[in-house]
Image 1 (tube, rainbow, N blue to C red):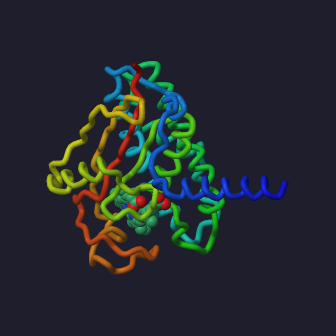
Image 2: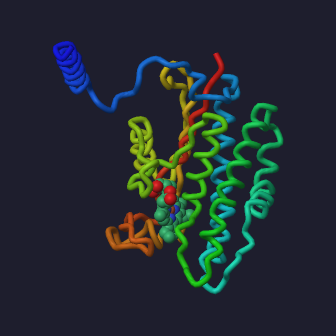
Length: 255
Ligand code: HEC
């Protein structure tokens, strides 16, 4: 009996050591594409869908950007900038844009609006604190959190990869690094571009839309490079008009 136990332990140890030799941190093989993607669009609609999502995120960022003065006012407690208030302004800025959306695109945009509202609601406790100026809330954070919830309902991936990314989830992948490098070279002339690709077994459309800096962004992303901004990050040393990053959208395409 003891001998048998000894052999079992020995076998376990050997199999453990065999696993230890495997490469760590590589994508798992196999799987069904449906596991990752719930929403899929027709090939002909892929580019316009990705563009809509990117534009909607950009507009949402602008709506929040316009409220930053109020949101960072330490004298105010309840700012009244709830998910509902935000969505009303966001939808107004989107209306003309999405008149021609197909039923699938309308459903996807509705899910994005749901996610954007939730992201705003989730930050109410943080935003309504009195006596504090910076509450660690800004357009990029809203877009990131919206993207997470949008992803959980659709599978569609949105990111804001950047040259010097502040949030780890914005680390550019190989393709995003390549596009960012091109955009930085092109500067103000950089235009959104996209392409079909594979994500595992799933055909996807990847879309990359440059984000340019505006003067108020420079308080954190401007000069002098390396000086700490008000949130404690080192400034990027960039100018207004420079590319800081991109909105990256990955949409699954039907067979
Ligand atoms: C108060 C400082 C501050 C200002 C002003 C600011 N940002 Fe940022 N930016 C940040 C922080 C902090 C993050 C990380 C947000 C997160 O995901 O939680 C960030 C993230 C980003 C990202 C995503 C990549 C990353 O670093 O994670 C982009 C793109 C970006 N900012 C662009 C802009 C633009 C464009 C403006 C002006 C409209 C702007 N920022 C204004 C501090 C700032």
